[in-house]
Image 1 (spheres, one colour):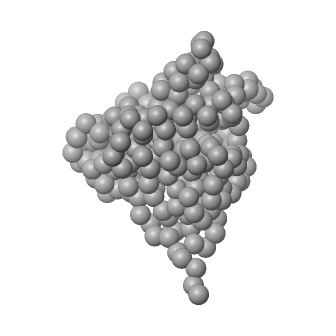
Image 2: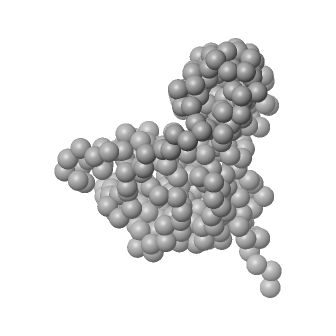
Length: 275
């Protein structure tokens, strides 16, 4: 008997029960996610199969029942870890929502929650997250869905949230990298050269590119494209036509924008917007 092979199929959707969040119900076989980040907490539950991903310099495999949390702004990849591929449910939970929930759970102000790298293997937590995701997707009982969502996310926070350790400053000049980021993102429609970026940091183009890539994990060009994609989400949600969003985001044309968007989100921008 031939084992079931998943298809490349993804559905993004939203719910007022988790304001500002994007939610994903998907399965993948061929698709591979290029290195990227999200501005939200990425909270997935692997339903079947297994996903492999690279995160913070290490490779991980999340099997069925695994919860591979990714912190906001953290670079990561994603691809099948077994021949069949993987199926999962994901909440992209806004930073403000998770931070406020952490404050409410603790009964006092908390530092921004941070989750250690690696796959959380906690069957009870996986069940709670899956149930909440399913209830929110069905929309049949908003009261039950909201209660399940708050229960699942508060359980995640109580059991696994930490405070982010201080980053090492060895061989990294964060002030200079910050200056380079400002130059790259000041006007996303503007053409920027490596020399322009280097000038903002007071470095040669060679040393600027090397420092930037070592610090961020991406080349300046790839990092700038990620920022463009993140900034494209709000106008897409607001219903702005894809062609206008592509131009305003600084992409050369719609096909260029669509290709990069699909590599990051697994679906073209029109389908993502249709959620």
